[in-house]
Image (cartoon, rainbow, N blue to C red):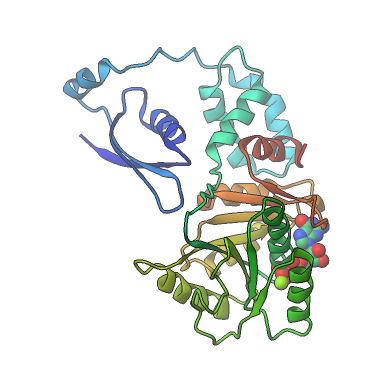
Length: 327
Ligand SMILES: Nc1nc2c(ncn2[C@@H]2O[C@H](COP(=O)(O)OP(=O)(O)O)[C@@H](O)[C@H]2O)c(=O)[nH]1
Ligand SMILES: [Mg+2]
């Protein structure tokens, strides 16, 4: 009997993935929570008559007959208009049509399918410890404004927020951080690029969340965050770090791959997509997110601090693929 690992956003999602990949008879041997809040399953593939017999009692209703793939021509057209690659469209439409039911409009069927396929980041509230949320990525992609937008959401939700920034050398950067801090009514720490980061240095005491901004230079950001990860990973640490990689929707596939590589050694909790208002073709960035397997946490579609920052949801993901924008 072969054992496979399946990861999902939650138990239901992981079970659906296991069934899709290994069939209705897949036997779940164990499940556990992962560090990013998802679920990991150990699944045994049904390979012999004996194993099948064990599973037979748990077999759910047989699936409806598959839908004719030609019914998905409209979906293909939409995906092409959103900038998805031909190869990716072929692959996904084949799987979506196999999973669709006859009573479902192909557009809804594909929306539901892709909403399950692209992982959404879970951000569980951790009781008693400060959550440090860091955004990394190239310069100009929307890290600083994204954190300010997230800060505005958190403040509206009555959370005690602090700001900290590694971007303290660039002309005007600290002033920008102070201006956002003032707007949010939050304290701010400007940190040196060579500073050893600790919960104390970040001003974590008494804060629910510390938003940690970075410079956009992986050579200095990545080692500092890796050291902070180790520091906060210690038993009994009073803060935990979640690092998100920020992808602008308006950039090339090659640039997306390069930046992902540049931060590849960090333990990432997920990603953020910005600048969705600057393109009608978010296909490349969405495909890239799926390829990396990074759970999507937030998306941004404009410069407005209060309005243009959204928590990722399966419906929102489906709209991006099928409409090229948020509904
Ligand atoms: N149109 C648009 N502009 C954005 C978005 N997010 C950020 N920006 C703008 O992009 C510019 C750079 O953003 P900033 O947060 O300073 O980028 P950083 O260098 O990564 O910190 C600023 O003018 C932001 O207002 C977005 O979703 N849409
Ligand atoms: Mg910045």
